[in-house]
Image (cartoon, rainbow, N blue to C red; front, side, top):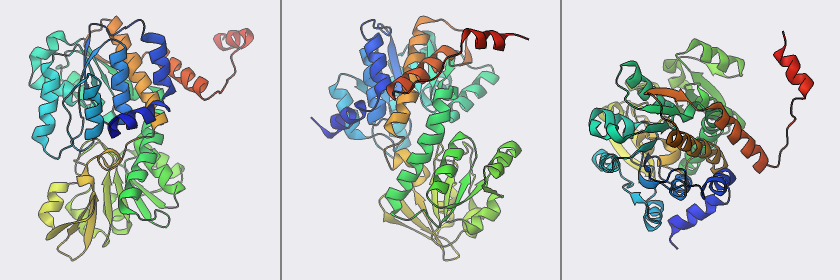
Length: 401
């Protein structure tokens, strides 16, 4: 048994929701006859999801959703389990995109996307694929932004289930998952203390909330930067300092970007930073920290540690970039905690089953409420937690005027 299979076996012990879905649906094979294309960070937890989808009857074609987030030993384990795997750990964008094309060439009937590369590529480069594509489930905030933009321009040709927007996904995965895994990666790759540091978190969406909350729990002074007045006000009320990035750049020790936008930290900020400042990105794409500008600006580049590159600036100071500015918790660590992804992937599996049984018009749809409720109840049951139920009198009262 290779290491990848052992990793998959490990996570299987801590994913009771996926195990429950298999127990409930495997004999029915609701995905029988479907080809499911997956683009997702390929590591042990996602591999276990892919194996579940196979058990539900589908033929699975899978690739990565970020060049550095594929774990090759896990990919090999999936091949040995009979899946069609096109993923490879690489920094080469062309190699990464070849995996996207290979999945699409299989003409999937359903797509499970993470960042929307499969879906957008199908719409922009391989439109013939759309003729056999029944629907898409999208995992991320960034992916949904792209697909909604496609829809708003009248170009979306398939229905999309917004998995990221499910309560049992973003309230837990984005907040507790991103919060823990981001700091796990930063700490294991730098071997530095977070306590006593000044941490700058760019973006106060659900992911930013999680990163800021965990930084405070580790003893850091936390500054939040935002462009959204309501989110900025929320950060203030949550007890964080809020300021513009140009001012935060002067005082920050560690910077984490989680905005989903481009060039959040660039030349002006680099030149203001302390000697030894650390830069990490937890957004889906490697555009939030302007890496190209940093490379052009620097007078010297060197590898300080695995996954840590030092850039010497013209002013003599050095800043350190983690994981090439890519998604730090997956490009340089193992991603979200297993139990958190069990929630998200339960929503994914149930949404694929829903799409297999329902024909929808092209649009971006919320996850059906019954799926959200089912997943939450499954999780509570797995944790052996019981909750109250409304009495007949209470229901009648709530329905009255």
